[in-house]
Length: 452
Image 1: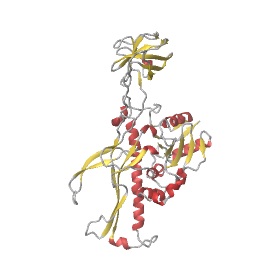
Image 2: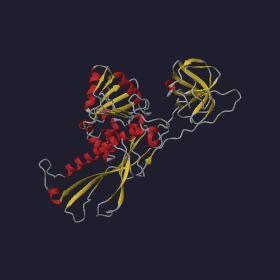
Image 3: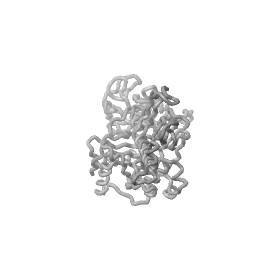
């Protein structure tokens, strides 16, 4: 998946670099595999807790969809504001026609375009004029008997380069402005506290006492809590008034939650791609059959192998530039459906010593035509009935764990009050998730069976 080698991971100076790596090294089959894999990345700190951001340059070749004319039922008209031409239409070469579209900002005069999948074929033309909601184009060939009713709506209009006259001046180029997604850091705290007496009493299984055991267990709980947040969290902030006492008692301070993989996928599917503007000018995604859908509901619990292949093709449309590999975290219910698919030889498994094996994280690798998928049973998903049949497909190099400066996972000792007969230490992390290109990730729900 484009991560470090198993040999590098085994080096003490590497895996002891952060507490998160240390936990992953010691418990590679534990309940926080995503946190473990992210600990192997660069993890660039952020210097802001609220709305830390990054830029994604999203190259999208100019295209739009046909829309209904100013009056009538179809998309094609003889004038800019006229009614749609009576159906069927016979397009005549070198004649100018008008078509209403969802958006025109990406197009210019002299662009060569194609209308895909009309009732009797595809139509090509060259743009002669543009308004806010329509394009005028000169047909470069004839096409007879094209249905011009509601059936012509939502057809793809795609630019095919440009077509300029000899001796003509050029148009202006376009600038692709990156989108700027943001997230918040979240403060995670888990305390370890004992009375003075309890600290000195040995346990049956550890004569040195309970402190070491409780510290270890709390560190694991701390990382597991972050695992849940990185998978399921949503970006939010609100204010709360602190209880009386201490330096900040009675003050109103913010509480922030960080967006996880699910939170980013939910934003991707909003109209326009939400506040980040991932999909400008496009509608909300509601149907599993939509090619941009990334949260698959799979309401019946059963999907065909053909639809499974469609989802694999969809999730590998965007992949990191290090490897054409992704990891799929599954509940055991979903993994059982994959196992049956393997037994029926509907997919090809690969026997290879992957980096993930070298981390002692056991995975099952399936090779598809579009990329390689590593399946990993996720204990937390298996424990939750709502996620036991679910799959999170994640492109790990597109993730980054972003701790606030000097607030990565650390143990803060002796946090008890001065006159308190006891000890209190705290595991503290303040961090958020950076997730680039939500379309490279996917959540498939309710995977009970995949049939041929």
